[in-house]
Amino acid sequence: MTRYQASTAPADFPAGVKGALAWFNRADLHDARIAIVGGRPGFKQYIFYGNDLSNRVQYVAKHGPHGAYLPIASEAAQEGTDPNAAAECREWLTALNDGRYGYLIAGPDQRTQSLPPVEAKWTTANPSAQILEQRDDIFVIKLNGDLDPAGCATAARPE
Image (tube, helix red, strand yellow):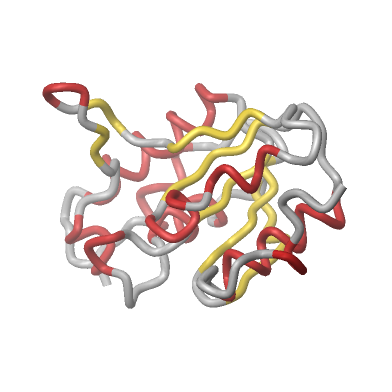
């Protein structure tokens, strides 16, 4: 099958999303639990369901009023200036643990598109997380078990 192949992705796909898709094509995952955050991968998340459509792909956010999904990380956290970022980091890692995800695809936030996603920084500060692919501020991260929110005190320190 050629569905969801990096080689046949439309020209408007960002390079980082194509890189993430190429990694998933090589890995040929089935029945994987995949977390998504950020605009670029979020708007293209369907490509990570796999050829057999067995992967569970979910955008990770908090619920807001009227059914809205709101980013867990504030715009100030994305910019590295939020004094409350450690609490947001703990909420982020808890959401990943609660979802029992095996992979995370993280891209820039829609509000701060020129910055790498702070969620990738928070996640990879844990020894249970491993960067598998990184291109154009899009990260594919393997989650090898529970992430320890205790590391957020250091990982989310304002710059």
